[in-house]
Each structure stands twice: as structure tokens, then as C-alpha cells.
Length: 413
Image (cartoon, rainbow, N blue to C red; front, side):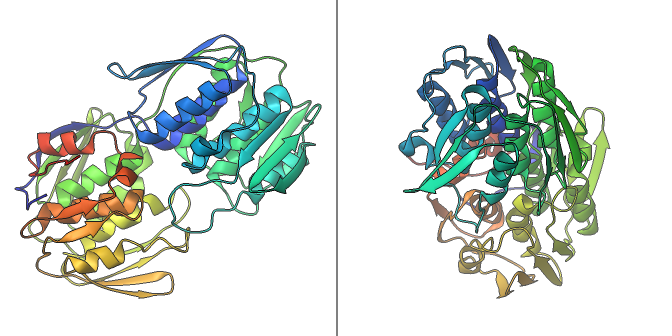
């Protein structure tokens, strides 16, 4: 990558990575065919598709038109393949559907990005409350239940994954399940809408108390995945950092409120309309303070991309990371490009600099990779980013989208 001119043009945001993965897993619950639209072409989706096939589901993926058809009538396995499941944390989301559908599941402890401890204890606490027997051994989690029964479950932390997994396990449970202190992310609402379309009875998704009345059967349905709010936020920062003008299509403004608010604080012009969001970068980027929080707070997934913007802002910014304890792995790479950042525990203090300089850097995780791309857009000379497989886990054809906006980059195999 070389320093790019101000990015200009229109970009269409893909379907949400964090929505499509639990929705694909939920397809294991239904009889008949389900059709899921707005599916992004991502490595994580490839892994989840292969995992569903491993369990006996029929999967057809039309990558050109962005939809997947799934028929899970003949599920013939309950143990997730290690070589697939270990690559992606979201693979653990098959546990709830398998437990509900066939009464047993065996899944490796999760892999994925090394951004900090993300234990599955809340998932297992929920399964146990529903009546499952749980055991952990040899790097696997096993769960068994003849018949799950509804229960009241309080989550110590509003975990998105645990909320999703417990919802999926509870749809076939006898009686009523109530999840308190549930996650309220838009992706939870999307999953509940998909399941309700199949015939589930889920109420309160998007609030911190979700009620699931168990049903006897779910049937395949059609559903379009919501737009990816993190991809949208990343492209909004791309427009701001290059002092460009980008129009984003296929976005939900309500899902981006904290990102929009912070961009405006940075002196970036953001205009919302029914057709999308327009971002106009200004010559002066102002320093701001950020604290990551569960939704509807500022998303932890936008922390690294936003830090790239703050690294060239006028003044001193502070970023406090409250969600993951190891999510400053991009800082060392940004400093190699000339950023002035100091880490103190879970805080990063950023002194804005006038310019960044290209060099060889490594994507340590998905969002760190996005951060490096954003910094490379404005860095003098050439930047070479390695380990881009992390980036491809969460951004569909980001290279082609940026090139279409005027970025000077080349993907090298």
C-alpha cells in the first residue's frame, strides 16, 4: 500500500459477520430449507459452512448473489471437527443448536483472534441451568440432555455469544426460559428475528431481558442478514482519515450512533439519510477520548480502527478498553509507523503526529489489521501488511472496495 489520495465514491456495506455466523449455526435447528441472504464472502463463513456440512447439513452457497441455502433434515453428527472449530471462536455457537436438536454436543474450546480471555463459562452456565450435563476434558466441552427445561438465567456479563447460544438451546426447551442481563446488540435481534421466522417464540431481544417459550418444531425460512456495523464504521474512518468523501449504502444509522458521535467530535462531517451515510473528512482532525463498552456503547471492535484516526489528530486522546484485556496488540505496529502511543494498563494515551511513515507491519488480529490498513492509507511511502488472513476473516473484499474509492493498494498472494 502507498499513500492514497482522499477516498471518494460510494461503497456498499456487506452483511454482518457477527450476525451471519450465529444465524448459520441456528439453521441446524430447523426442518426443511432455509435461505439466508446478504451473506458476506468471508473466511469465517467458509469455516461455518464446512462445519454445518460436517454435521450432515446440505449447504449451497451462491457467492455471486450472496445467499446460502441450508437443509439440516439429516443431522448425523454431534462432535465438531477440531481442524474446523479450532480456527474460529464462533464455532462454539453450534453447541446450543445441537444440544436442542439432538440432545448432545461435543465442541473444542474456541479459537479465533488472540485479543484476550473470552471464556465460555457463561454459555455452559446457561446450558446447565436448562438441564444439560456438562463435562470438559482433553480440550473439548461435552453437553448432554434428554430434554432441556426452561429456566431463569442471569448472565454475570452481557455476553453476546452466551446470549445467542442460550437462546438457540432454549427454543426447544420445555416451558419458558428467561435470560436476564442479556446482551442487547443488533446481532441478537437479527438472530431472534430469524428464529421467530422459523416458528420460535422469542420476545424481548434487544433488551436485557429475553423470554423464550419453547416450541416443538421449527421450519426453514428466508431471512436477510443485517448490514455489518463494524465494516461500516471502518469505512467511515477511512473517509475521515484520508480527508475524503464517502457515501455508505446498506447501513443502519441507529447501529452506529456512538461511532457517528465520536467522528463528529473529531470534526468529521457525517450526514445521515434514508439512503445511507455520507462522511466528509476535514483538514483538522480533533483529539477525543473513547471508552469501549457493550452495546449501545462505543464498540470494542472499532477501537483499533479509530486509534488510527486519533494517531494523526491534533492534540492528545485517551482510549480506555473495558471489554477485552489484550486488545492493544496493534499499538506496537502503529508505533513502527510513527504513531506516538503509550499504554498504561487498559488505557492508551495517543499524542497526535503530523505524519505516519510506511513500513513492514503485521496484522495481529482482525481489527488490528483494519487499523493498519487505515494508517497505511495516509502514511508516507509504502506499507506492507502481512498475515492478512486475519483481515479476511471479517472484511469482505476490502481491497477491491478501497481500490474502487481511489486507494493505492495491491493484494499480493
